[in-house]
Image 1: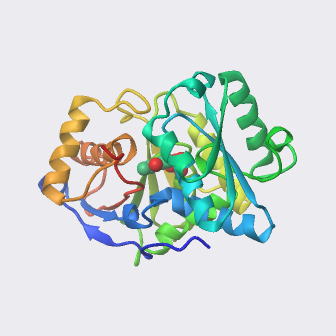
Image 2: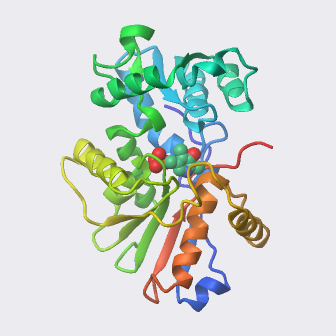
Image 3: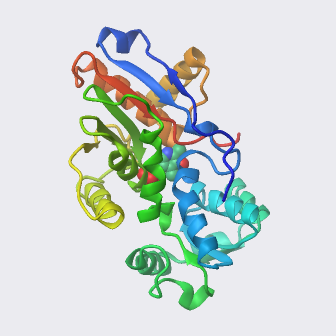
Length: 305
Ligand SMILES: *Cc1c(COP(=O)(O)O)cnc(C)c1O
């Protein structure tokens, strides 16, 4: 068990004038305070996988990520805390001979062995892992030895179960509630939707460009894998990705700065700031009926500067 720092995470009111004018309430679910080394939704998604890894007698975790992957750092930190080995398969063979960036250095400091793959190798290995959904023989163990394989971003059926605990910590959800989170791979949104009581809805904000159809299919696939059925209480907004994954336009940066000064909550830019800017924009445009209560999940922490 990876001990949380704080559970349940705090729920704070955060309605400002623009939202109040639209008749919309906003609360923040402060999952950014959950664990110092395995933040936010990464802890939610990893915790049940780690329990399963230990129960199944695994001594090594294998997973995937890009050069700045929060998931890789989270797996490295969690593995170290539990006395497990970890192997990170990194997209981009050209990175092997370059000085490590801060993110890969942090993963290595936590004992993760990094293996750098070409785009083609990476696609093949993640494909094998997805086919196994969390550790079947089809995974990349063929090359990197035995271990529990976690998919890119950590989103598998157990991750959905972990994220479903987020709405379970929100009291009195009903018809007027919309629980909102950013969408990278869709695991967090799938969990939030699966954990909602009848009447309440989930809204995901895609942080990458061109995810229409693909991300919905992923959430549906995860629901079938985790719960054996589909859900119709969620949707994904594709209009607020800010130009694509990792892009932070000046307008978004300005919004995030204002929000931080007003509310004293540090905003991770690639996901959390996009989510909050999207909710503010949607509310101002009248997308939510008056009386709607939004709860935004603060899924992570800002990068170190
Ligand atoms: C990884 C990450 C996400 C993406 O979550 P998915 O479950 O992959 O959709 C969202 N927010 C933050 C801060 C993250 O680090």
